[in-house]
Amino acid sequence: MLWSVIPEAVVLSGMEEAISLIDGQVENCPCRLRSAGDGFFSIEALTSTDPKDFLNSGLQPGRRIFLPK
Image (cartoon, rainbow, N blue to C red; front, side):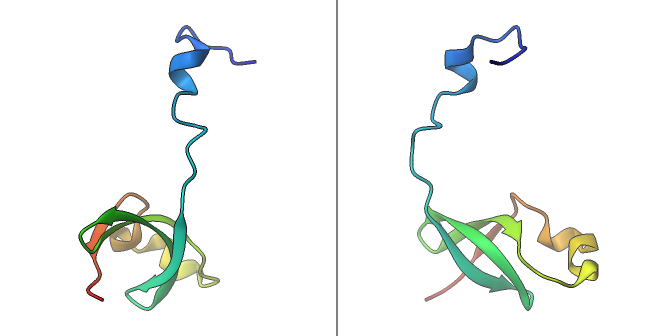
């Protein structure tokens, strides 16, 4: 149950789609990445154990990066 004025079908639309994440490194920080096509990825989450990585503004979730093969 959701407490929202937005209909539940709108809020939950797309939730049944499978998300494929890959493990990678950005600026020597382990991350989970989502493919955006053509070699571009977006950072979904940091998997680092170093607290300094979470303070790095260049590693914010949602940032698009290019990773050549």
